[in-house]
Length: 610
Image (cartoon, rainbow, N blue to C red; front, side):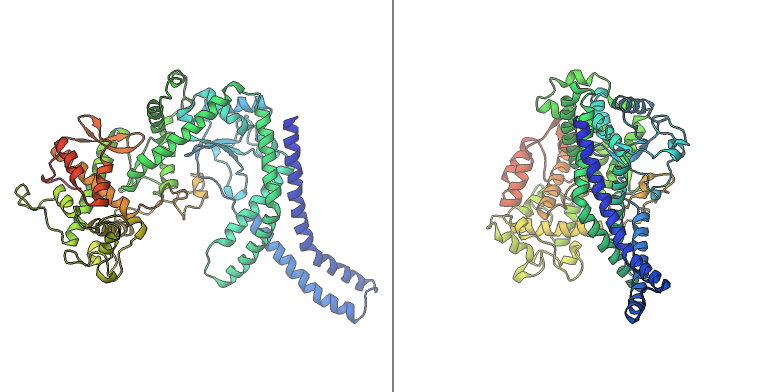
């Protein structure tokens, strides 16, 4: 009863959308219909006289213009390419067991099977219609759908939507849990096959695509004016359809969920818990582990496998692993793939593009990194590059090397130099901002011990980028150094690297991802840019870690939940951040120096930079 009710609601709303389309067509044809009536009246000697002649002369050009405008708008709506999610295609040859499971679910639910399967580097699953001509024909190996229909079936029946599965689900979930999660998604192919619902969806997607076409920047004034009119009409129709389309999709979702209740009901609650857990672990892995690697031109090639390690560690720390030990012994869903490693690598590269904006393929400055290589290739290199940048900025500011009987005579970079510079016994708070902006509001670092902003990497004649609220509560040396680091990093990121080739543009016939617009990468940025205070804390932490590795035998490590970490005698150090903040905010290096002494770290010894 619930399935029927949801389907009826969806069909009723679909008809409402189609009525809006019919009214738009009627409005476009109305002037032409009136013109035909006037012409027929003149031919039959009925509508004669100066008034009718004038009406004919006025209405006929208007009718032609309206028909041309309506035809142009219809052409744009029909030819505009609807948005297509960037995914990794999975053929039946690459995952026969997965296709078999989906086929069995569709049979049990008595709905059409999806036409293909694709993976997305996110914790979500949905059905996506890719039947628009702009999306191109299905690849040769995908001409058959899951239900086993031959190539001729596509010419007789509409193509079912593509099933998009979140790749983290395949690695974290067990096979039974994945079935329970996919059941309500696959059940949506039933309502999607209804002609009215399919037509309504095509109309709404076409309008949305037309709005995107009209919003694209163009230089030609004529095309801008024409497409502005197309965009106005498309937005007007979309506003009229929005409410009905939303209710239609709710009806489809309700009907699909109700139909799927009979399939794997016992696993439904457990599977939904795993969805939430997978999302938490995936988000933590991307922001804490993958993002530091992406920022330095490396992309972890086994992100989905890392999800399992991250979630296992999360469950262990939060004492959630009691019931997980048994489930981890069951067959993981990634076993449904023939080559899970290759699929994981493709999904990991796509994740780097979506969340960070990396190139489409590996290159000299964009190479994959395995988890076993992460501590040395990412963590150690990141710390030494940050430490080198820190000392480079100090050199540009004219900061002298550390002094004292234990200071190296060569002037080599040391942690003591940084600690001595940031140690400040003066007032904090607004003094930090005054020190950062220089005397009389001048550029940062305009004091006697600093150089002009150009030396720190800022464009000539421009002040360093500052955020008073962010740097409030810091000392003057900290605020100045933070601003200079921010300017130096901005200069490095703005400078093109000669070793980096332009991103390759895959052909639509070989890669469906070529059909989505990647001019605005990253599409889903993980975090806003780091503030000047955060940059200073990161660089100071990196300098401390370099000193620990070079003078106390510490090693770089990888924490699955927190990312780069410092290991001393194999144990993770977790109490460094508060001491770094004390130095930045209060100018007090005593807690940090005590911490260094306790661990045998020699701040006066030279360190190796990147």
